[in-house]
Image (cartoon, rainbow, N blue to C red):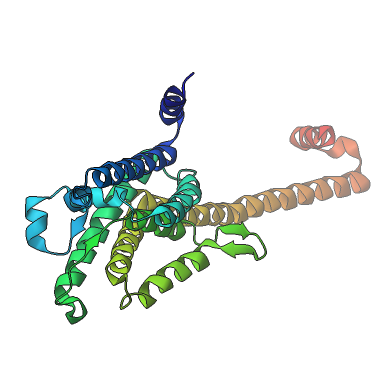
Amino acid sequence: MSFIDNIKSRYKGGNIVEKLIYINIAVFVLMLLINTFSGLYNSDSSWFIKWFSLDDNYSALLTKPWTIITYGFLHAGFIHILFNLIALYYIGNLFIEYFTQKQLLSFYLLGTLFGGLFYLLSQNYFPLFQGRSSYLVGASAGISAIFVGIATYLPNYQLKIRFIGFVKLWHLTAIWIALDVLGLSGDNAGGHFAHLGGALLGFLYVNQSSNKKLKIWDKISAIFSSKKKPLKTVYKSPKKTTKSNKNSSLTQQQIDAILDKISKSGYDTLSKAEKEFLFKQGKK
């Protein structure tokens, strides 16, 4: 099997996380090849980035609407893609243990979309970015949506980190978001706004999901149904016990009266009904 065939086989057999990783790597390699051959021919190599990255103005989005998604598959360098794909691998595989692969893809794409919208809003609203020109690339917004989504669903899930120990998922997410907030006025401020947009999507997606509402409703129903059973038992039990006690008390009084009659007058003085009653009680 050739190298290309092996890659194809791995891609087909991989889960959605692995497929997203392969796609991001393939786009990154393609970008490197374009840059290399463009350099050999002394031509502009930035056309690929310009065509698929997200510009900071709304007019560019109208002429290139696909860039609101495609920027999420581009990366500025090797370190950029390396850290993003490592995070996607670990967080993504945790995510699909509790959600479907289709949902992970939805988180990735919608997180990328929300991140792009946050980027555009920030670049065109805050005075800090006036007079500047930038473009957005990277999968971080989609990964933030996945990260915050699974942390919203399992906030107390613990991950074991070397040299640190067990850390709750929501603690890691809080650090992730805090770093983005602190970077809102830095050199990569637009990227941090995009991360926060993806994070917001992840939180809202899980918090408002119909599945979660149904689970909460089931828990509420279980609470009420569990209360009904004891009440029903407690309500009926005294009646049964009282009735049984009354019957036992009455029977014992009749037996005592018959035995008292026998001791005074003898067995032959008993009536037919009294003899039958005494006979039945002796069989019990």
